[in-house]
Image 1 (spheres, rainbow, N blue to C red):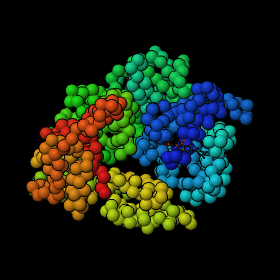
Image 2: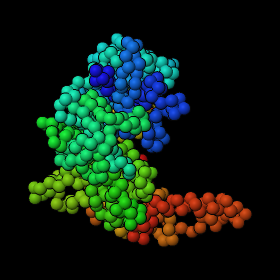
Image 3: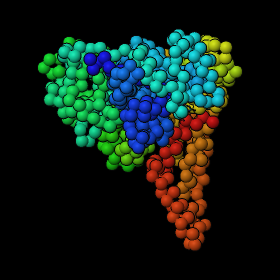
Image 4: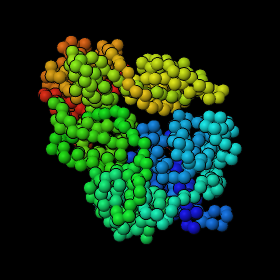
Length: 598
Ligand code: GTP
């Protein structure tokens, strides 16, 4: 009977359409958190999420809703991120739900990630509850958006909830629709345990904490469990739910979403997507895993202090448990020493991982510019994958380089179509097609090299469409391209961590831009430093950093000790992120210079 009163749902939306604010209102409305405890974006518990105002990790919370029919329902709300880099997290949380609240901004309408996420939900056969949010905005046009949901997605939006998460309008109606339209979970309570691991996080006291959705059976402390894919057994210590603080329970049963601990210390053993069952009486076959996600971009992470190499490895292992899309393997660089080549879903993901390593694990890192993986066909017929530009084989050994391509969909008002096409063309894109969504919105589809997308495409797209364009992309095989490796020499020495791959057509220009950029980034030292860009033995651009003359504090007199201290402090902080490369001190920014193409 309890099962009939459970509703498991997610909220999906394009970034900034108001998911987290809506989740806050739901928590308030259901008295899950008291007014005193309430803070904005409660589910975005990571410090980084609050600061940036974005959701990175999914969060599951249990709440109780007293519906108009007089019954009390148990809601499991799973918040999901909206950014394209994190769609992996979205598909994982959807697998634990029967329904999804689709939030669409009443002024912006449907955007690229609205579509991408709602398709994920429809693929999983979830019941969709459409909500048109931000109706308080002067520019809101809910009727247009209602029509758009019907025309573009093909959902019946005649009963779509009109809401303002900010003003608290429409929240109750939405909760009622969840009760009415989202089906209760089914699943045999008597069957052997079958539960899906959809997230995991390491806790120093409790070991690994698994987030699970129980599909069949029940689980309680003392049960002997088997993680089916990793084939390891444990004894359950505690089960419970987050509300949003952890609350112990006697058991979790089919339909429940909650957490489980079992003194799991070895973080390698728990894989998101694995199935938990009983060791003695296992379920017949594991649940289908999730769609696997593969990294799109790679970069090198090096501790500024070489002695911290093992700490970095441990930090990456812990982070990986909580971020299944992160990959890493050891690598060495002549310039930077021992570090790791890490794979990310995109640049935002890369940024987030770096910041979490710095904040949560106190690491001081030097990171190299991101690169895609090239499939290199050698003259002897063999293939190698190259995700570190400095490892590109000699050009005489290469028959052909294939680079990953993506199919990009840019959704934009039709007045900006020209600007979008020009940009795509400039980024080596090939036009595929153009669909009119309605009278003024167009979906422009191009095939483009992934490497062009990861650089500054999104920023350029936003600025050339005054922020109106939204972007979605998916991998679409690889194509042969005329690519070359460009090396950077500082003081005559090749710095492997600064090498990058460019299309031959842009090589000269990019070599020039980068040496000029490095000249402004690398501080002057007491000798002159030549900077050169080269393809093989051929120098394509060069410049010099002049020797420096003055001490920064020389001009400041003793009368102003405060200012002097501040300056020295600033200098010290700047130094922290420097790496001595041969005889030259190179700051972190230099390794990212290749990303700035103009
Ligand atoms: P991500 O977590 O980054 O995917 O974004 P989100 O969809 O969770 O959006 P969030 O809740 O962070 O809201 C984005 C912005 O829109 C914030 O500045 C909110 O204050 C604002 N916002 C949310 N709902 C409303 C609303 O109903 N009306 C108005 N005017 N603003 C809103």
